[in-house]
Image (tube, rainbow over all chains, first blue to last red; front, top):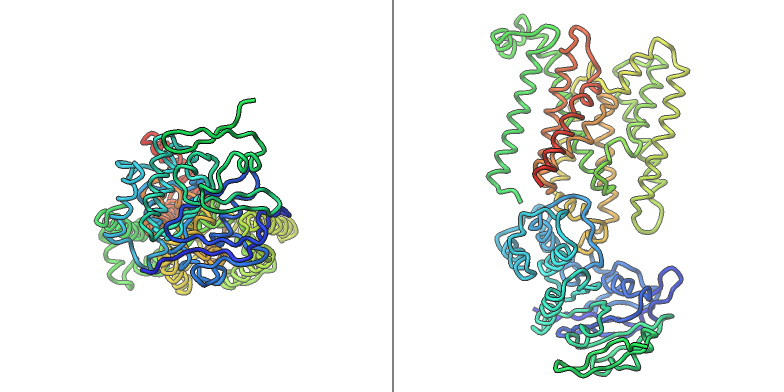
Length: 259
Length: 327
């Protein structure tokens, strides 16, 4: 299987008159786990949507390998790029298993039904996100954290090389935050997958991510390896709030400085 | 996911019940047949009641089944299209256009046989109006479609009131029956059945796409659906189903809302199971409703739309209550 990466070239993204990024050149390679950091409302979700082909850039292009994603059929795109959305709302009731199985949709033909292997994948994914025994449960009865884990399981079942994640740890308790972030890191380390996650928790980014991109507003951005990017000064500039670096046994941690 | 064996059993059961409902419809009416008479009539159309069964009751029952299936299928599609479990086949104005055309025809004294064609033309006009106004440029907007459809429906309602007010008194009763929904003059035209089967097959083919569409437009796109195209296809198919049903039987209410709902509660929301189940149950439900409409006050006949609502409401509330208890 070829290793697939995502490339941005001269990307300009705007939404409702707000400039998210200007002239963004970025390469997301297999094996990399990117953290997308920035204050509220700066356009993190819009950038993710643009990388997923849901939002049209005002200039530049997003390339999957060497092909512009705007020109690829959605079905093909969905086999290589997947996105965990920030919110999932279920209007119609469905079972947890059936929802996880929707991840197979782009891999199946018009009349095709899910086969044994698809069921196994869904089963494995529910197991991986700690939803064992939930298969027959109704999705409308899930708690916020359980629904979040189900959405992540669906992404695992979809199994795209590029995983775009919009605040993956939303609604999750401490154990499951660490569990999910660890799972993304392990998946990326196999050298076939890449992840690109909008995060608010700098310490999760510091602990799990290999690379960081920061959005400062009005199109300004800065990207690079996590170790070079994360510093008191850069975070202070990013969030407009004094930040203190503390050394811990697991590496540096960042906290808002108490005034 | 429903196990295959269970799913087959469900479909078989619904098919058998459908056939049974048609058989019952053939036996009951202002003249009720005994077992022997009924059997003799079924075997020989030249026998004493053969004419009654084969020329009147069976075609009417077949029409009822088809209309019920058309409406239920349309209801399922409209609910996914608007992502709203309260959507019904009439919400986007298709039936308004059909009714206006049919009522106008009645007030002008057009022959009864021409009314379905007239109604279909009115429905088509309404579909085209809503389609061209709501389409526009840019991304899909369910809200725009809903508003355009609902406002168009209101426009038709005003025109219908106008026809009712200005039309000759002699045709008022016929118009009223049309608006309530009535199968008295319904005969099963082959084209309606052909439309049903064709669209049913298409929908079954895209049932998995409907499943992801029900999870939201963005989710569906992320899972590989070209949603803009898909949603317009769903709109057109649902509208054609509604137009066909209305042109045969007028505005039979409630079936297209309640049957998809009931079936969702019973079989879940996987459209590969939901669509066939809803179509068959809708057919069965309307055949039984129409049989009741013919017999309850026999020899007087009620418009079937009255019966569907009277039956549907308690049935629905009962099931809703049971579903809540189960959870």
